[in-house]
Length: 129
Picture 1 (cartoon, rainbow, N blue to C red):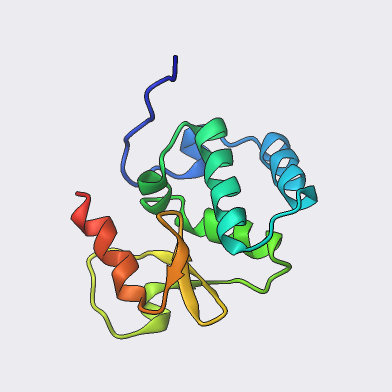
Picture 2 (picture 1 turned 135 degrees about the vertical axis):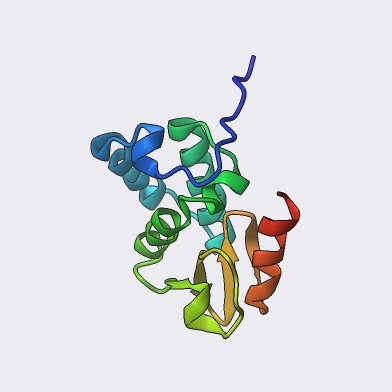
């Protein structure tokens, strides 16, 4: 039986029960695994967030996106770059979203295969509301 995922928008890791030692232990496990590409790393980190914080990919994007992006950056030896949407273009939004820029594509928890257009990632967040 799977417990229900928490659906609370704009939850940050601290509110979800973040413990540095548990989080870092799982990140270390992921770093020692043989992930062939960034999509595998993103899937693994999404699973970490679901296991430790009981959140789905949508809710990672709604409050935990910066932590998520920094975890991905760490796991790619800083080849992936966390970027806020307002650093990328002049798109005016009522929210901020941190995405991952890697090899000329933008990624987040809901887009493990990336997009060349950052706006497409943001559209999914608003479409799910």
